[in-house]
Image (cartoon, rainbow, N blue to C red):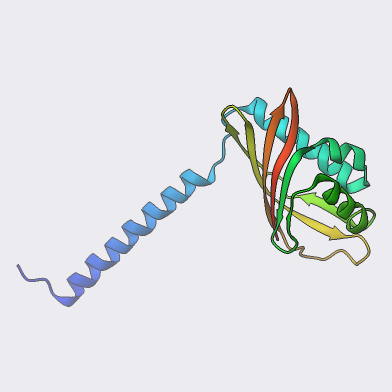
Length: 162
C-alpha cells in the first residue's frame, strides 16, 4: 500500500490533534482542585487569614503565636531564617506599616500530611504601602507546612517565591 505525501500530512495532522486533545484533557483533570478534607481546608484557610491579618496590621504577638519554635523560613530573595525571634525582628523592621499581603482569591490548596498536619500552597502578592499601588502586581507562590500542635495550627516551614 502506497501513501502519497498528502496522505502522510493528513496522518501527521490527525496525530497532532489527538495528542493535543489528550494533553488538554489531562490539563483539565489536574487543574480542578478539590480538598481531601473540607474541614482541614477551612481550618488552614482560617489560620492563614488570621496570620496574615495580623501581618498586615503588625500584630506581632498574634503572628508569633502562629510560628512554631522550630520555624524555617525560605525566601527566594532573602535566604533562609531559622530563628523565630529573628523572623519577628525582621518583620517589625522591614514589614510593619510598609507592606500588605494580598492573597490571590481561590489560589489556596491544602493537602493533609498524616500524623503531622498539612501543606498549604497558594499565590499572593505584596503591596509596598509607601509607593503607588502597581496596576499589575508581581504574584508570588508560597508553600506553608502547618503542624497541629495540641489543636493549635503552627507554621513550621515557609517557602516564599516571588
